[in-house]
Image (cartoon, rainbow, N blue to C red; front, side, top):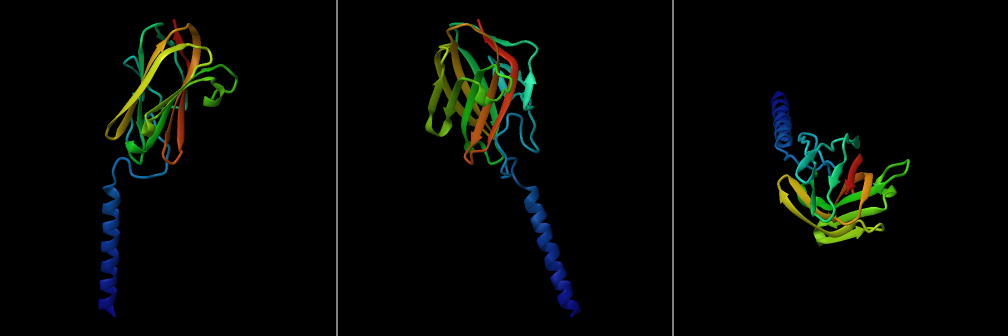
Length: 188
């Protein structure tokens, strides 16, 4: 009986060791059913989740107020790049969006009437521009593991006073994340 107990105990120890070694070797984007992020996952952190004309902005919080709004010049193409991480890997990110003109008391993506949404898997761009502030708008993405970079090229054609601005991303499980920038952007 002692022999069986030793064999059984040894087998349990081997199984526990194997499972702990397997857990240690999980990739940076091991599945955790969490939404995409503009600042990293549990073990990966970064502070350049948004770049406007090359200038990085830390969007690691749900909302942040900028001291000085970014000015996008009229008639000139500006770039807005989102650096997105998803625990399930960069190919699971299905859409990225910019929302603007949010002026109500309750700021969220649903309170903005202006949006640019890019569906990565369909290479489809949808622009909602009721105030006719945009000229040409294009978007593209590239994957540089473990991130997907979505770049919007936006040419403002009408003046826009300082407004709030939000970025958002959605993955293949429809997990959605967003980050709000208060007093973030204006066109002149």
